[in-house]
Length: 252
Length: 252
Image (cartoon, rainbow over all chains, first blue to last red; front, side, top):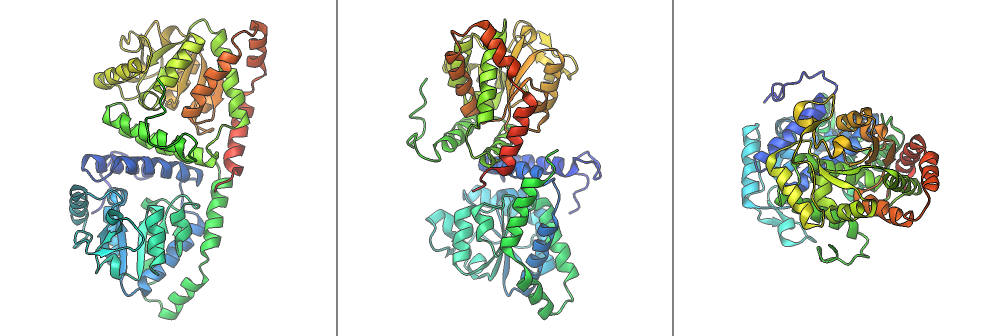
């Protein structure tokens, strides 16, 4: 599950992270995991990440910590995985699921049986046990049929969901169901980021391992302390700080 | 050559331009014109265009006017076309070539015979007579073999080149050859934009028709007036204004 030899570039190369991202997203196309829309979305993310300086801001780190606290407090946390998430961070998702005791559910905007299967297989190869999403016996109210499908005992029953790179309609519909939503999105003004209880404005390739790291640090902390972390997190302030970083960051 | 019925959305729809762009770029994939890299690049452009407010700034309009003056003054102007340019604005390129008497040359970062041929065919279908680039008997100094290929009597002999969405290495190498380079790029701090005599920070789908419109307006203007437009254009100021627009534009 270590990914160090995937690309022929040392991990301390200044472009390592972006070259690895590019490599994984293109491999995702070959494997039928990443869609055309996914490639375009990847490019949008690259531009925002470039404006952010390609690093995790202090504010995004605080959001990742709040996300970890929410996940540790949850009765039934679920990590939602689409094509780009599966292509970019399959091993990291498996690791986070283990760190917080979450289930993993495949959840596609453009759902086809082939892609669902390819993504579930890819996740299993990277250590995810029993990815959900194939049963599709639950529905998210307020979305059209194909878009609404979830597993009744997965996202359907979840109290806390992590939805990285999620479409705005679905992010809003999940929030409207009363679920505590943790969104990872590089655009602080996307509807997904705006509808989240915890918006993490960061590259998913940094954010997912960062949530896992915080979760391990918080493992032996009391429930009261976790609740304190959750209570003091301010989503609006996080979005404001992210926008400020994009506006004033070093473009060069 | 009119493209009004390509998508089932009225031209005054607020998302018309972005829906048309999306439609053309995806059709480009089906036709073997747009590459994976091209889809990612399209996404990066979308993000920058979103930050710009998806409109042509005053400064970008002035750059388009300077570009038109350069093209009208040129002895041998050439429009360089890659996969995304061909997918997004084939008819608009044909129209601009006609307006300024320029040649059109296919010029790919990832050059394969199939893509060269598919793009040349696509351009012909949209009214480009005799697209160049297939002979490849010239070289741009300082680039690796495949990347360096141009037509000796096309870009090789050009005094003014329009290179939309161009890779930074090649943009710099063309500028180093002493060619007057007009770059269209939505990132004002890309190496391509920085190496241009005239950087147009605008969406190609707006910029190419805008240059053609200016060229037609300037058709009967004296050479002295054209030289005045060229001389008063300030590339650094244009890049500064574009960065300012991205920084301070209305994100919502």
